[in-house]
Image 1 (cartoon, rainbow over the protein chains, first blue to last red):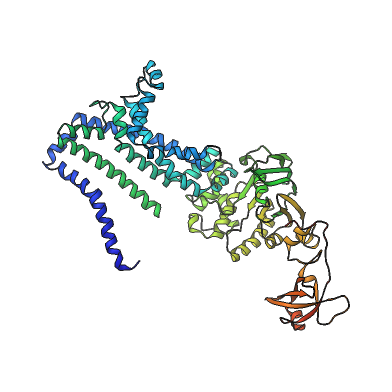
Image 2 (cartoon, helix red, strand yellow; image 1 turned 90 degrees about the vertical axis):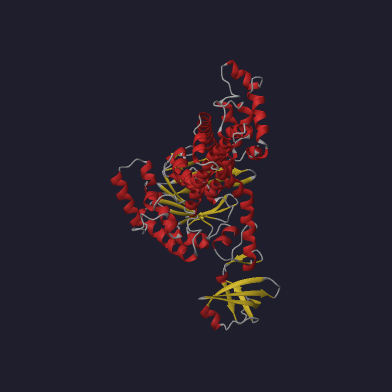
Amino acid sequence: MPTRGRLPLRILALGYLAAILLVPVGAVIWRAFGDGIAPVWQAVTAPDALHAFWLSLLIAAIAVPLNTVFGIICAVVLVRQRFRGRRLLDAVIDLPFAISPVVIGLALILVYGQAGWLGSWLAERGIQVIFSLPGMVLATVFVSLPYVVREVAPVLREVGTDQEEAAWTLGASPLRAFLQVTLPAIRWGVAYGVVLTTARALGEFGAVTIVSGRLAGQTETLTLYVENRFEAFDLTGAYAASLTLAVLALLVLLAMTRLQRKEGR
Amino acid sequence: MSILVRNATRRFGDFTALDDVSVEIPSGSLTALLGPSGSGKSTLLRVIAGLERPDAGSVEIDGRDATSLPPQRRGVGFVFQHYAAFKHMTVRENVAFGLKVARRPKAEIRARVDELLELVQLPGLADRYPAQLSGGQRQRMALARSLATQPSVLLLDEPFGALDARVRKELRAWLRHLHDEVHVTTVFVTHDQEEAMEVADRIVVMNHGRVEQVGGPRDLYEHPANAFVMGFVGAVTRLGEHFIRPHDIEVRRQPNGTTSEAMVERLVHLGFEVRADLVLHDGQRLAAQLSRQDAEELELAQGQIVFVRPSRTRQFAEAPAG
């Protein structure tokens, strides 16, 4: 490409990013601090806000490890095994990308709700899924499921099976060979998948909003809390909580860039 | 330790990689599995290692039935074409891996690794990572790693296939030398007849999942069992039903009653030897190989008429398989 063409292209790319991403996010931060720091601090440390913050982290702390372990197993099956229905499994994994989170929420209610197939059975045994933590975790697991699989599978394919087989001939059990030889080889793929899963889990709104019942101080995550405040005309509260979400997102993003830098070494 | 493979068959879908193969590999030998790609040589090696399970047949290592033993318990060392280096471990950690799995004491591991790195001529590189080594060095590291646990059998799958020609030649000579020193029963897979001839003392020639012939390098060259083996272990030229080595064609300037007339179509100078592509009067083509001196004495030139006679030919009952 001639040097002349470069500058307009760069302006176009950066301008697009600024207009679509940076300006709105910046505006949130700007508006949050519109009345100084004190009201923001007050809003962030309000009991319902704190509860929402911890609930979001708790859900991510359950959903991310689940999807990490499942994602790695699933990637191994997809990459290394040949069986009938493999392509179907491959397609099903992408379902959460394709279906709107709201639909996922409704589907979960159909299955786990009071009148649902599994829900009524579970309710008889005193386990409530919908309108409580298990349902919210389920919804989050569902929407953030593909990330680890999709990040790990190509790396796993590239690494191949030679190293693991070499470890077998050296006496290592299949589990040991996987943990000590293959896992380190795919670690950046796993880490990248974990970061994406975490970001998705923290930011989830649509599916969780349906299955949570939105009980303030009980089943309200940070994203739901933001909307709650917004609808109650508590703009400072809404922007302050948004700021907390943005900071969490930034931390995740930071982790991701650090990983990319290491990977590029 | 001797290896005995009996009636091994292995299919991948519709493809038969091994078709009722039986092979005996004597203890302490250096054996090459030679064949074109798809001949089943790598599958046979992997069956011996336990990395592949035969659909039928058995594998015995040192008189013990190993057919259902996992690779962990066969006492084999395996070297891969693309090194299979553990990239996140240093050279020392790579070589020590098998010893660590076997829970050897630390001091012993250290001493053994040092000794092996000396053996494969990599001392001083113990703390490097595989990415900091050349291809030849990586393969030598992989070899040291496979020898660490003192396997009874060493298996190498196209060990020099990924290396450039010069390093490959160097490592061939070195493997031969190593085998003379360590004496471990060694089997290596190659599609390069020159490599097999140069390194091995026994060659198993394979084609289409079957063993065509087993023998010493000279044996195979002088007494090939069929047209495939004759063509695979050396250059061959044909005259009707007769198979001839190009150096077994006599080229003269004058006819002597038993010779046929031919025209030199092309001359190729390959250092000490000269290859002459000939066309007989009936249109058949022959390739003759002469020493440079003979070619000069005959004053061979393109377009020249010469008189040729095969000094030694072979005929095989069956048509060549491919």
